[in-house]
Image (cartoon, rainbow, N blue to C red; front, top):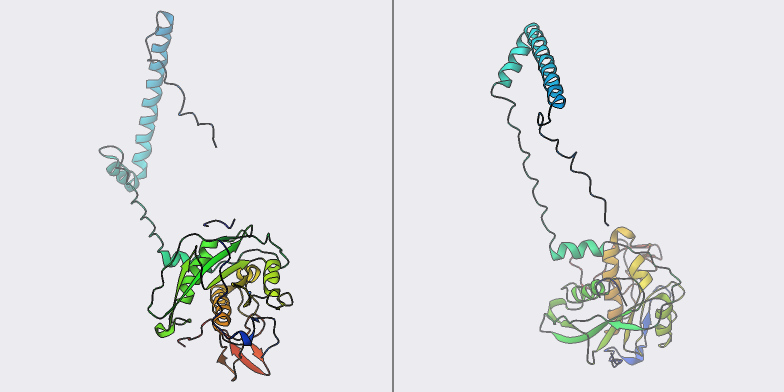
Length: 316
């Protein structure tokens, strides 16, 4: 099972032209208990309650103690007389007993994070995962659903996560829904809308899987993802495969600091193939890389420097 949040095969309904074939990113340029502390010594018995010698002894001890205290007070007064203004200030401050204790103002309660802030923080974290991991090959659908927010052409999809990955399946599902329905994504200008289901017969299944299992499913469509450990759209099946190694670790082209954007690019790129889009690359130096560029592999080509870009329709 996936962690920590948490289906008959769906039909393959790739919207792109079957003649164009499947796509992947392996093509050449052009994924206690504790012991309680004692509260203090037990209360002493009331003094002077003993009989005979014990009571007389206590009386003698008490008298000696009083004499000692008086001697200390007299000595203190003499010292105060020599202290001048310092003594006066201490005397004034001491009138009426010890100064009232000041209570520290209570610390303000921290403002709880919003759902969006929590999501952004979670999406900024990388996770350890072996590039050679071969998982169980068994999947669980992330439970629940997310409605299609727009009125454009509607696509339904299911999110499957391979058992035993140790990755957050619900975070992955949330990322897919947020990404695809962003106006910078394939839902641009209301052209499309995407709904997540966990049962029934969706248009495609976005699958988070180990590198080994990703390779198995991509090979079903004649694709080799082992060269650069990438993801693919296995177009001859119902599955859009997201390589869990790339989801967890990112790529050198984006770096750890941009792992959130990299994950958005992964989703948009592979779903873009499912929608019929081919690989392209930027054509001018300093230009944003098209989302269909193989950005896991490269940003620069033929002396041209491309800028990382996770969106089909970037705003800048």
